[in-house]
Length: 516
Image 1 (cartoon, one colour):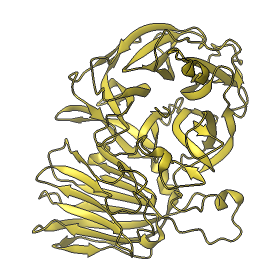
Image 2 (image 1 turned 45 degrees about the horizontal axis):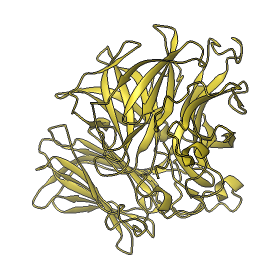
Image 3 (image 1 turned 30 degrees about the vertical axis):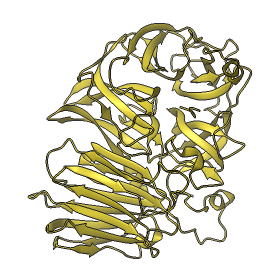
Image 4 (image 1 turned 180 degrees about the horizontal axis):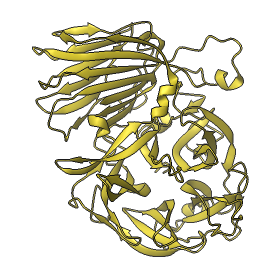
């Protein structure tokens, strides 16, 4: 996407700076106010959508929409980073630059194991990226066919890229919004499948060589949410109770449940040609109910022995992405998440869970055993004052208990997470959470009504520097939000709802270490 002229809560809140005077240049670049300490950010300048996510030879590649000459959206390149553990990142040189066909917008990447493209060999199969060209000159001239699809390949593990000399491989048929190709290998037909966002729906194409594409079907013109343009689709299989189902992700700008940018999903079947939604046409499902998780897609070619479907999203919202109060860099990615299906009384649903690799950041730990709270419990400690930690709470769910979690600082800025049983709602209140003068759309209370009709059994709160990610109901209910406090939210309190008794089985607070 680009600029269109148990509960788990992850929070970044005004980081303290590492004390090591011998830190590397990379570390020194990560010390700015609000710079996340264990979420991916560019070293400098503007970033938006994750692109080209592919696993190859022990590395998870993350490309991303990048403007290297400023901290607001501009002519798009593909930035590049790799990680071996989904947590610690190595920044690499820009992978793709704009050329005579246009800017390099969003797309995907695959390992061409069978060398169907002919760009490599069976012994050294190529990495192939598939991306949207956006021609600004054609756009200025008033044409509507200014977006096409191109490809590039790499034979050195993604370090350098060669663009196909016959680009574009998919021309525009006369549609203004024609972009964001996500490509995957469909084993049953031994062909490549491309899902492409086309104005207010998606189109599917097939190819045997990644160069010649044929349209095979469409989906979505009369289904899901249509509050804005559809973008950044994905399509992949998952299993639930031994049964294969297909999940389609589609990002939408505007039209998210709490305003602005968001990502809806569909569950159904795919036969190599058409996708069929198993839910009613007007049933809208969201991967995240917060303001700040957009354009997320999944990694290609994750090894079968791993077996996970791994996801990452852009942690911002087009309503204010260009004006958030950071300077050296702008934007972060969500914590990488594993996507799964769960069966509920309403049908199959998608759940999101932070990857287990985050445990590699664990440090000091403190525990409290079972107790009953009738008012408030102060959980502030040396660990919470360091701006990165994980809070785990297991609730006694014999009663449906209301509660709130308050993160605050000495100047009375606070962020509040609240569960209200009567409405079965979770909410995040960032009206008093620090700087929000940069946008009238930023402040507010953002809520979701849970599909699960029972009390919340557990809570996990992960604190970093300038956002929250809230996962409830085993990852079924998710809220991701930015926050920009003036000082670290070092104080932490748990409140029982008024006139209620909150029963706790266990509370654990764990230090999280920095990755920079």
